[in-house]
Every structure is written in structure tokens, then in C-alpha cells.
Image (cartoon, rainbow, N blue to C red):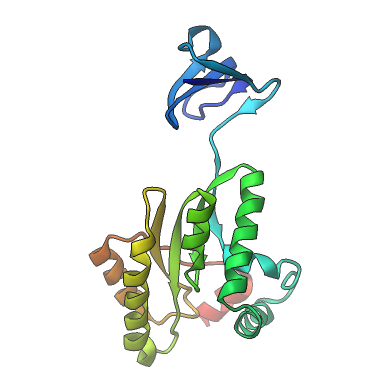
Length: 218
């Protein structure tokens, strides 16, 4: 048993504990409470700090970490076109994987241990596993033209079959019909049906900008 002592322990589900302890046995939390009541074990005094659960970032694009500073302050249409072109022309799978790894290092250093990541390439599952982080990678699908639906959903099904082999108790797969402006109604319905059949969580981009709102409405 290892006992981590801190000036303040934040269980989140109940009030903060002054002079608290988190005790860990074989990699699992066995006790959270006042130091005076903690079970015996090896002591690690963290000092005058607040000890709290890892943070959750519910929406990331770790494979695009390398684009930081490249897309800021652009109108929505220019933003999406520039992102798409740069990703196609410059970021191959190896670069996308390295970008995801770097984004995870940054996140873990900031206390983020759990991720909800929307990904097109599929590399984030591997990056999450390598980092020992927890999360769901939502595999994206695109296709604004209803005529694209059959091919798009077939491609998504193939990716899901390949990626499920990489799931672990910490890392799960989901699916993401990208957004209302990039996915037809038919593809939305087909993706939702796939998610139900495979028991996969689903994520979608909605209401991201005023430009998108006008585009979808008009």
C-alpha cells in the first residue's frame, strides 16, 4: 500500500479533505480520506498541494496538434478548407501519429488523463494506448452527398472492424458523423444504426460557429 498525503484532497463527489490521503494498492485506489484514518503503508508526502482526479477533455483532435498556430482567426469556410488541404497534402499517417503523441504529452503534463477524441486517421487509439491514458476515439465519417452514403458507411464499417482489435479496458472506440454540413441525413442515420449494432458511443460537431449555423439553416 502506498499512501499519498496532500494538504488538500479533492474527491469531487464530496467536500474537500484537509490533510488528506489517497492510498493505492496494486495500482487501484483503496482509500480516500483523512490522513488520521488512513490504512498503514509506505508514505509519500506531496506537500502543500491539492490532489484531485485526472481531468477530462471531452473534445480533442490530437492528430491535428501540429496545426497549432496555423488556423487561428480564420472565417469558418476558410478555416475548414485550409485544414482539409493541409491535412491531405502534408500530414501523412506517421506525422499524424507523432502529432497525437505530442498532444497527449502536453495534456498529461497539464493533468488531463481522459480524452474524448474525434479522429479521421485512426492513429489516436494507438497514441492513447502508448501513453497509458484513458479515452474514447470517435472514428469520423464524411459524405454530404446522399449518393456517397453507401460507400462512406462501408468504409466506416471496415475501419471499425480493424480498430476494435486495439480496444483495451482504458481505450474504447466510437464513431462520429462529422457535422451537419459534411454528412447527409442518410449517412447520419446509417452511422447511428452502426453505433447501435456495435454498441459504440457516438459524437458529432454541432453549432461550432455562426457561419456554420447560417450555412445549415439557409
